[in-house]
Length: 321
Image (cartoon, rainbow, N blue to C red):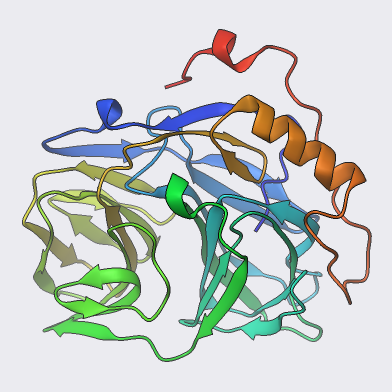
């Protein structure tokens, strides 16, 4: 999924100096962003109070939306570099196309993982015809410096491993949880998991003390470490935890995001993750005028133009924490 903000701001993220080294309960308020004609997303990362969680650098939650008489998701071809995109659905389908020639329909609880590496472009759209409901999350993972120029590639996994407890099923989307590892390629110590709880369930999820964590509420009524989390909100948990208490007042869906704190500082703008403003400027120029990001074949529409870069130099803007 693209960042379609036409006033995209340069942000400096990462660096362990901003990580909370102890357990906290920090409820993040989403920013509402229009994505195309009929899809509104709730943006949890980057957030004014929190830029990253481990290597997770971008989190959008959308739906559930009734798109029976709507076009649904329509994101034209756009570029990415220096990151991975993670597509995760609870309802509906998304048709992925990219400049490598990939064409894949992603269904609920299937992993669509695109590693942009040095450069890739892709589009996302609701297929025609499509299901009535669309509900899911789109997430980005920042690539470490040693791997951010890898060859781009796309993975689609329909059979993901699970961890279970009474009233709780955890599908491991990326990384490792409780000794279970996702088949998706990860470049940093990380975890992404989909948590399904039945009404009345109480459970304790094992965590890594060196990781920082957050929980995104997808649906239902649940408490995370005693804090009620409503759908579309995210609770940042800090580091230093070895387990996480969960309780569900109704059937509920959550996403656990975590990882080793990202040590490197990154520069993020529009759909690019880089290390310097010069890299961002060059990537924008390459998308508008060059062939570095390739072409997406088969999408019925024009590629997405890049927004204007902000006029104030990044070093004068500060870290925007």
